[in-house]
Length: 112
Length: 110
Image (cartoon, rainbow over all chains, first blue to last red; front, side, top):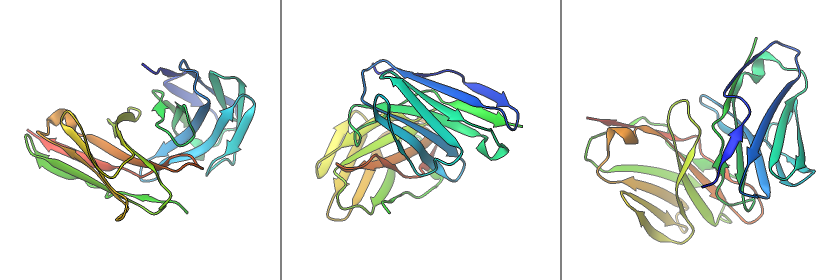
């Protein structure tokens, strides 16, 4: 079974803090993704990575950055957290870019 | 702009009935389609995928694809209260990441 893990299930941070969300997959997938999910807006792609050290912007990259130093690990960074970044953050991985994605359990981030 | 459209619901069905969830997509280049189930507060879980026109059955689930009409559906037979969740449809082409619909909420009443 594919396993995708995320570093925290719940996180509370203050406005202006730098926030790191980590994701690890154990299936040697080439592709990894970061989404946020908000009521009524669905899943929105923030960034994805198709190889180590490679990344591409998704639909809503502003205010976020990513890092992929190892194949199994993909980190999402909020440089200066703001209240409008309060959301559920979901990491996913897949063998091919357009193929089925497997999701981690999600991190519910609250920025106060 | 590639889009995947789903009725947000809720779709309410009684226990034991067939639930029919529908999805349309705008990108004619889409080749692969996926259905995810998402329980409240949880992450999406892949339940089916379909690449070819026609039907694909897996237990109580049947996925249907009609590329000419750009239409994908998921049928759930003998619906159970445990099937109550939001169902996400996603489409993929060979040159881009998956495009997800916003999901349809299904409520199965005992």
